[in-house]
Image (cartoon, rainbow, N blue to C red; front, side, top):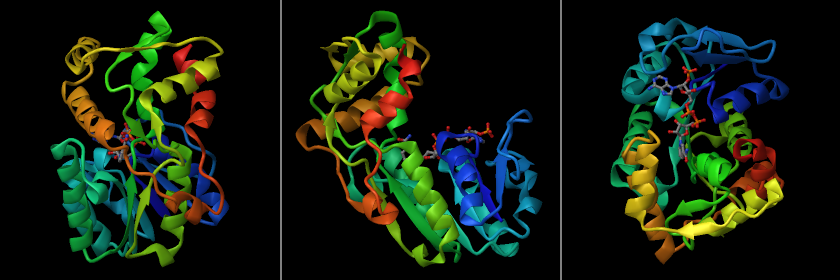
Length: 278
Ligand SMILES: NC(=O)c1ccc[n+]([C@@H]2O[C@H](COP(=O)([O-])OP(=O)(O)OC[C@H]3O[C@@H](n4cnc5c(N)ncnc54)[C@H](OP(=O)(O)O)[C@@H]3O)[C@@H](O)[C@H]2O)c1
């Protein structure tokens, strides 16, 4: 049995669906009473950030996927329960900034603290240090739908976003194979692309022009906040992109090495998710 926290997120849901093919039964943790998962999934109703709401579900669990956003401050308690109840391994969805630096300081510190807590737990563990998800670019969807253009900052900043299905493939692999215990995998997409090139990939998937209109970060950030995005998101995003303008974000070969195939591209993601921008 493998317990997946954050099971209704893009990575968690895909990980749950991949485990049976690897011979492992998934337990999917969610607060949502209406959440549906594939047949054969043991759905656990609880709040990942309050381990007392689902601790008994850790009995008989061999490995645990920790989604830091879902578990939050409940991490030390969860790790204690996991240890007491005989969980053998933990896979943590961490961030590449822990290894390569850069980005919003509070964001990096949060992931570093999560890694330290997992390392201190005494449980066998694997850290997946993830580049920004391809799905983060959904932040452009409202403007593309409404104006068929992207007014944004740092168009020439380059990053290598990772397709969430590839993250889930590695999560499922490392949850089910004890050989990954004690290892950290820095995972990125296959290719460094500028923000303008990301938008061009969305435009190609939509089959129409979507111009990039460069605006100062203060203007782009204020527009995001006006749409209800928490102020921390533009700070985090533009802080990191300013750095990627000076030096592109990292690109590693680790995903291809682990999966034995080329990683999915941002173009693949844009085609699969074109409806969100239409
Ligand atoms: N996006 C990135 O670029 C990036 C980069 C590095 C690492 N990460 C990490 O990767 C992980 C997976 O990301 P994701 O996008 O697949 O997941 P997500 O959508 O952020 O969250 C997954 C699920 O966690 C639960 N959740 C969220 N906030 C919660 C809260 N405050 N308290 C309790 N439960 C909460 C929700 O499930 P229910 O409502 O069903 O309970 C949600 O559907 C996250 O932990 C994130 O920190 C992301």
